[in-house]
Every structure is written in C-alpha cells, then in structure tokens.
Amino acid sequence: MLSCGGENQRGLENGGSLKSATPFVWKRTSSMYFDEDGDLAHEFYEEVKPSKKGKKFFMKKVTRRLLPQGLVDLPHPRLHVDFPVVMCETCY
Image (tube, rainbow, N blue to C red; front, top):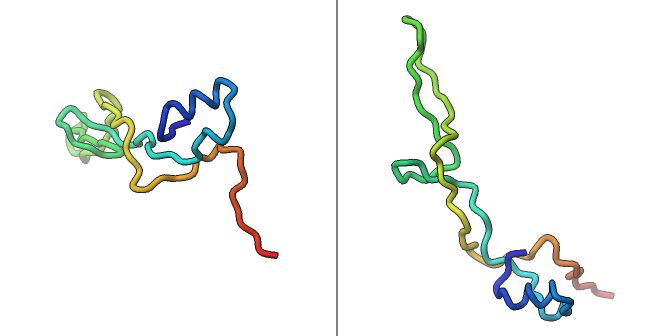
C-alpha cells in the first residue's frame, strides 16, 4: 500500500493497529512512458514504409526502448481501495 509515511505501513504489517495506518494515497504508478528522445506519452507510433511499391504508409505501435515514468504525485490525496474501514456518515 502506498501511503504518506513508511512507518505507518510497517507498523500495520508487524501487527500494529489500524489507528496507526492512514487511508490516504499520495502517489500512484504512472501509465506514461518516455521514449529515446525524452518525449512523454501513453503510446508511441512510428510511420512504416510499405514493402511493395504503390502501397500506403501505415503506423506501427512502438513497444521497445520505452522507459516507464514511475511514481507520480497525486494532485490531492485519495482513499486507498484496500483500507478495511467503512467511512460514512448517517443521519437518523
């Protein structure tokens, strides 16, 4: 679980209480990649020359030589999906 402090998560894994854990996530794994030129995008395509004369050029998806962006900060904290506490308010 990605959370604010590593101490909170380690405390929960070693038998600590839920009171010491935080339900918030401040970082996530990015779905974007860097190519060899340093450009950042979700997908990269290259124009491929046809093997026969008279055929049209086509676009081929690039899957090699791409580096994942890694962890990115979220603009505001989100609730972790696996936090085992129901958080709601009810009015009687």
